[in-house]
Length: 284
Ligand code: PMV
Image (cartoon, rainbow, N blue to C red; front, top):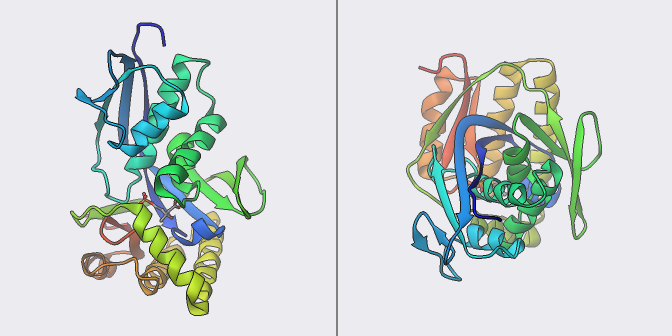
């Protein structure tokens, strides 16, 4: 990283179908949205984030990215259009933007390499993860993750017995409204809670399977441009996620208050707080 500044940015994302179940290898669909996180790096005397020295246990995603690249002391500056813990993928966006800047400072940006490294960082910090967030923040557009390789295949990522094939997904023109509960919840503990439930309960395993089915149905509805049916499946997905224990009173309230004006609505991301997404043609 010779003495100059390098920068990259990554978009926020909204998971339309399949969160949590995707960690078990089920399919999921997400789209990048028009909010971005920007990151700049330059050589420093010590590593820092936005001017504050970076201790070994601070800002785990940023520290893990620097460690992964054996980076010399680096000053990292970030600036984001969206809050962290909002379910819009801020940890994936900061990871992807920083890794892309680090790669650009060395041998240049390579999309699949950044997506892979970002997934590894997320697994390291979060313990369990799927590549849906990090792949969406790297590639943009719409993303479909599924076990089998299909049309518009981008890259494959695997971990233990799980395999995810990541695809670019053509998304029909649609209007989404995002509602933030104002409560931030870290993803790791929610993912761990679902794992405990699934490990000990066949009913929870059935719910995860059903989320997989609802997601694949949604992919077909999207291809046909049937937003009404897609919306119904999003609402169904919300109810399944609530059974898995990752919704909250605020999320349920947001979903039920927008449903009269929407094709469908659901929590998006890890849940517990974070955000709700509604598919609608009455965004006001
Ligand atoms: O809330 P977010 O942006 O961290 O989304 C998490 C999505 C999960 O499916 C819950 C976890 C994952 O790694 O796929």
